[in-house]
Every structure is written in structure tokens, then in C-alpha cells.
Length: 405
Image (cartoon, rainbow, N blue to C red; front, side):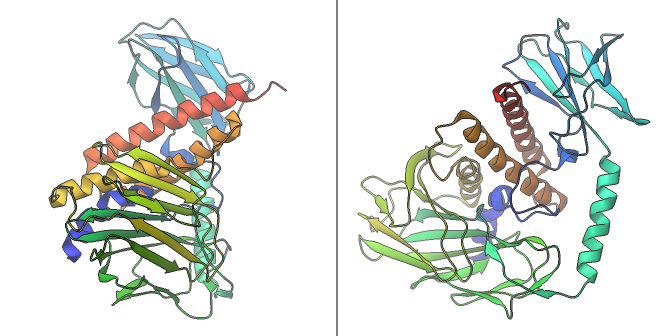
């Protein structure tokens, strides 16, 4: 059973958000080093257009009036960045090999080589001061780990997920949780964090990607402290036997849950309800498997999430998945669950910012998985490219949605 859990959870690491780097609780910007120098497809741009954005240390800290060079087709073109830190090059020949360069305070930054696409354009970001940022972060992390822990509390972060899928006579349940310490020092909560799984939980096992501080015995998950600043990843899988058509799952959380996010595989006739759900929709995974996705507001420490499943078949209508198929489904679940939001956004800018924040979490978590060597290089590169492409597009739309000063 535990082997199946490990395979099934491998894709979930993409959206676990147990960051390998220290990030604040509210994610506003990605780790700039992840997108520095990369050419991101921008289909909304005119053909033969490349924009190069120059920032200092963080996305949004734009450098205006900066000279940028674009080596393309054996020639060099220059442009100056505008108030958004962006230099634009137009009328470029499709298929021409190119690279961008800028020098900020004596630091020369060069993009990765790229080819001008035949349709649409490209966006490139050059980030100055990355080495200084890395040194500063390393120093801060070392200082925080060396300091004695302080009394405090933790929360279960808003990027935590509950995913359910059917497998013959059982419901497989995955908890993918980030335990957040928002302090700058290690926190002692007065003992371990204990999570008792719902009544009837069987075969519980910790999943690949979990912190070594987390263990499971029977239906109890224990996470020992002190908790380091940032996120501690806790991932557990278990099964619930389907011995009746209507079942109720109740989960009491030992710490405040910042946001309810639940995904349940859709079966014919199945209904999913909860008093904690504020928004429910149907989405499809990458391979087309339909899921119910629900979101709800925060729950306090000691609060209970109650989920009712009605018209559950005694035998799943879904064929038995192989281990690799399960992994593919969970990978897809990670992508579309990250797209979910707490409620429909009426304001365009707020909607863009919400999607941006979700993608930033995916990007940071994917990088952690890659650094741990847990994700195949081809899958890692393809998903990273997709996330980066959508991030650059969203930042471009945010710029256009911001009124000129």
C-alpha cells in the first residue's frame, strides 16, 4: 500500500508548497532566480516582438532608463527600458537566434539563447542582484536556525489540499498540507502537532515529499517541532472503505486552516456537499478525468471540515488504474487544484493577482521537488516552462491593467 501511495503522490509535490526556500506567508512574487534570463512565449504579442524587462532583486522592482542590447541574427539592437522596466524590440526575423543583455551597476546579465518564434512574441526578464539576495537569505536562514526556538503557533497554509479519488471499493484520500511558521525564528508550539485522521481511515502512510518530522501511526499523524520559518510539508494518504452509498467524512484540524480546498473525483450520480464549501465547480485533469473542486473560508484551530458524499457506488465505475496512471491523475489534480480560488473575482486585476499567486506557489514547490531529485527532468522542464509562460503573460496583463501614473 505504501508503495502505491508514493507513486500516487509524486505529482502532488508540484503543488504541495513545502518550499525549499524561505517565503513569506503571503506570496506576492516568485523566486526571481527561477525566471531570470528565460525567454517565455507571449502569444499576445505581435509576431517578431521580444520584450526584455530589467528589475532589481525582485519582480516589480523595475529599472527604468536602462540600456538593453539584443543580439539577433548576427546584429545588435539596443533599446531603453520604460517606466515598467521593459524594453521592446519589434520586427524581428522569425527563426533568428537571439539573446538579451543588460549591465546594471557593473553586473552584466545575459539571457539564455532563444529563437524568435514564427508567431507571437517572447518576454524575457533580467534580474540584477540575485547573488546578493542569495547571500542575504542564506545568512538570515543560518541565523534563524542557530537561534533558540521561541514560543508561538503555526497555521495550515492556504495552499493545503484534500484530494479524493475512487479505487474499486475504497476511497483514496490524500492530505497535502503546508504547516506555516510565519515567524522569523523557529517556533515551539508546546509539543508536537497531532492530526487525528477521520473515523474509518485505514492504511495511512506518509507520502514522498513529507518532512521527516512527520510520522503516522494508525490513524494519527504526528509532526514534531520546533518548526522552522516558512513551510513544513506534511503529506499523508489513507483509504476509506465504501460500505454504504452515503458517507460523511469529518476532519478536525489541530491548527487554523487558512482556506478549505477539496477535490473529489466525479462519478455518475455522485454528489459532494459540505457546510464549509463556498464555491464548487467541475474541472478536468490533464487526462480528462472530471473532478469536483470546492473552496471555502478559513477554519479556526479545532474547527471541523465535514464532507458528505451521496450516491457513492459500491464498486467504482472507474477502471483500476496502474501505478503510473494514478501518478498522472494526481499530477493533473495538482495543476487544476492550483487554479481554484476562494470565490469568483469580479475585478480583473484581483483575479489576475489570485492566479499569479497560485502559479508562484506551484513554481516554488516544483523547484523544491527538482532539487530533491524526485521529479523526472523531462516532466520537470515541461511543467516549469508552462508555469513560467503563464506567469509572464499574467505579469504583462497586470502591467496593462495598471493605470499610468
